Image 1 (cartoon, helix red, strand yellow):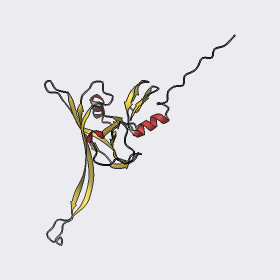
Image 2 (cartoon, helix red, strand yellow):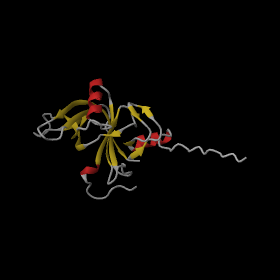
Image 3 (cartoon, helix red, strand yellow):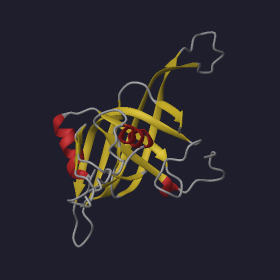
Image 4 (cartoon, helix red, strand yellow):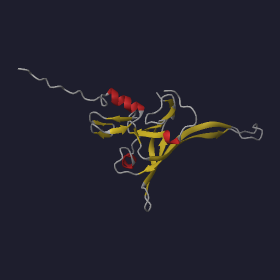
Length: 148
Length: 51
């Protein structure tokens, strides 16, 4: 398939994860997801900088957040995620565009990362959906690749 | 992509019976396909012996 043209519908972005590489399953009942890359800056300002700060890129890091609804029988939902966190398991994560269907759209780009759950919260109000929110801290390289 | 598991899969933390529909990454789908987990089992036709 060709690269998607135009502005992408955010509902098309899905998160797949698992405990072994290339064995990722979609996280069920997700309502929101985001990924954030940060580059720390090294200050190299000196007396000869003319009064303006000078910078060079330093350490790069990334984290991903996922929020969703709780379902006891989800294939890859809160119950699986909390088990991964308690066990301290490394997760292999794909942050991808599935387009209008359920298949990642070949030709588009996706993130392929590894990381650990640093926070996982389950929320339950009154007469409302039980939900969860999770943060994954990325370890190692952040790979941005073309979907094959 | 959504795939239907055709024979029990018990690897990498996943434990699925045949017939389970799962939404997996493209790479995982290729891996399952290669392992024969998405192929429908061949039906063995019983031969009728004519006497």
